[in-house]
Length: 83
Image 1: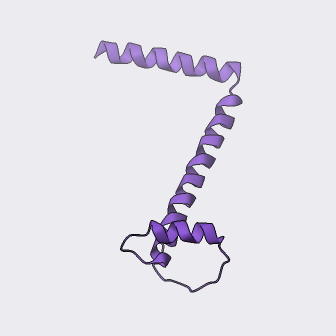
Image 2: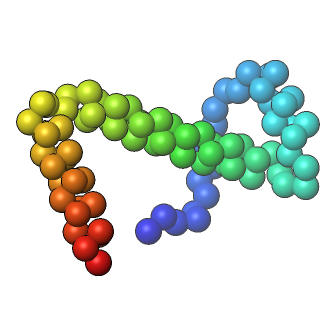
Image 3: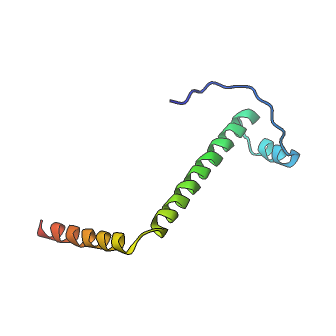
C-alpha cells in the first residue's frame, strides 16, 4: 500500500519547465502539480513497458504455439456454437 507521506527533496528543474508547470497549475500548488505530473509520467512509462513486453512476447511466438492458439480458438468457437 502506498503512503501519502511527503518527503521534502531538492531537484534542479529547467526554468522553462518550471514556467510551464506554474502556468498550468490552476488552484493546486506547484508541488501538487509536479507530483501529479510525475504520477502520470510514471503511469505512461509503465504502460509503455507493458506494450514493449507484449510486442516481445508475440514476436517470439513459434509456429507450434501459433498452431496451438488457432486450435484453441476453433475449439472455443465450436463449444460456444453448441450452446
